[in-house]
Length: 360
Image 1 (tube, rainbow, N blue to C red):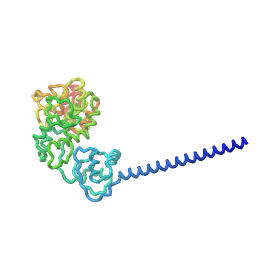
Image 2 (cartoon, helix red, strand yellow):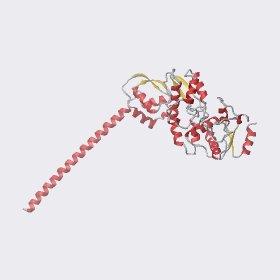
Image 3 (cartoon, rainbow, N blue to C red):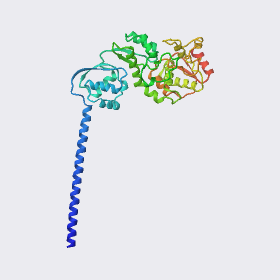
């Protein structure tokens, strides 16, 4: 009887175990189905967010100069051109260079997919209106102000006063201002092509220029700050000098290296460009006279060693990148050859020979 009882108990235990295993198996299967369902639904939602809205017809939208990709995505979503601003940002990060997007008033026909809208923004196609203004690399602030007034945008005197004393809330403007600096905003007026609305004020224009600087330059400068002993404002100041001294792009980093070599040994930069800025010139000549190099000004790098108190122009991205990643060389001198290129020299005697050869 005991054996029979043991057999019956084991049978019951096995049956209970099988039932438990079957129940666990059913739970696992149900969990897998639920998980698959969630994945499918999520996938459909993601795919749907990348699809164009079912809206049709022509629609206009405006991209302000200096707009970030996040701001552009918001404008497109509000205009019912895209479904999801987040999805558009992800797409741009993976497949498009948003730094090439051009400002302006656009008109497009819906529906339009992400690929076509990013290409349109990159090429600046379908722009309909706005005052087009191109600020060349190396313009000084007075030139920028004159250019704006010539386009009937704002007032030159008001623009310059704001550039000197205006209170603009940007991280890169929170530096200790040297009292001898002519314009606090010199160097921060990013050279680019802009489209402004016809009634734009000087303050609105300046904010757009500063926004563009923030979006295209600031992170690079902030990251590079103090890597070679210069803070970001000093890097920008050096870039503004390189912008005025260099003609050929492939020499910008080399010229930056020369100036850094001079700074390292406390040698005067002796940049003609800084003297011309001190002379309040807008269009710089190739050289300055001996008498001009004796000008009393903190911007005169013939008279005072080191960098001037602030930028002397508004440099383009190539000059900024040149000071962030300067050429490593031992040159201390360079002289213009007359064709846009320069002769670089290690010693003063070599430099004098180059002057005799190229600047007779």
